[in-house]
Amino acid sequence: MSVFIHTTADGCAIRLKVRRTARKNIIVRSAARGLLDINVPPFVSKKSLYQWLNIHELSIKQLWQQALQISTALPAYIWFRGQTYSYTPVAVLTHVQWDAQQGFLLPLANMQLPQLALSIWLKQRAQTELLSRLQYWAQIMQLQPVAMALSQARTFWGVCRSRTGIRLNWRLIGAPAFVVDYVCIHELCHLRHANHGKAFWAMVAEYTIETANARLWLKKYGTELFALDNMR
Image (cartoon, rainbow, N blue to C red; front, side):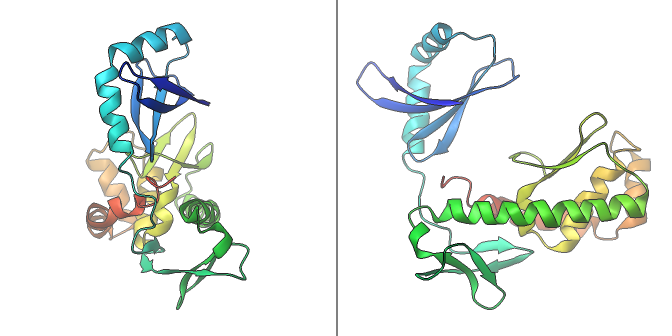
């Protein structure tokens, strides 16, 4: 992965972060303030990439202008375990801390990149708490995936594949316990039922009565769990 500058015909210097992926098409999206992510298939050469950028220069410039509008300020609150918390910079701290009454305490030295410090802290908690919950349900249901991991996905909360196992979206650390349990149960049921047929939903219902409530919560608040994503 590397960052380079693409200069347009009218002199705009656009920062692009290149990722080589297995996708068949080149995909560009806003990544951070003034920065675009560009996913490039492995067979595309640098010369071909530069030609593609020149051909799609107008669209690239529009995306870049949108990226310039991305805020670097923290959101009004942070979701953690189904509750929202405020945050306070503290001069004597060297790392992020959390308190149920005071909310998030952020080291003042890191306030130039508070979203990075918070993301790292939340991902660490997700690694411990979400995967522990997934393992708990795997034991209860006697269904063991080949692997358990977290994902950075922006389009799904969990995914189950026979070869790679189950991955949970790390942002679920912001969701309440009944939502996390539902996603774990949902993905584990896919080890037995690949589709979302009647047998699948009947099995989900054996282990949770919160399906409707969990889906409603994610529909209502799910986008807020991505609040830190656009502030890297």
